[in-house]
Length: 128
Image (cartoon, rainbow, N blue to C red; front, side, top):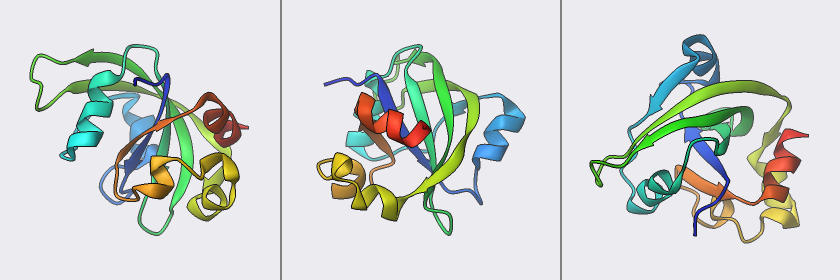
């Protein structure tokens, strides 16, 4: 089921939220997991995103919005995103795991999933 909100994981040494802000717009690529690819295909223009940095950071650090989705190649959807704002206070993975709002989230249950659907309530708590 498609969501209006997703969390995108990125390794900050490869492409950080600061890089996205510098570029303003980018194509989100490098996704190979079938579930993550399905999540990308379900996005639509205007979908709200949380950018989560992995590695040493392990926190939700910024927002973005889907500009366009091209599903012509079902194995490699082209999702263009636009940078939003930094999150006022980054939210760590430990904080998310401790919050019952995330107990059924693929973010917690499928730790290696790089494109994770969020509920409206989860998005709001990450951006407050």
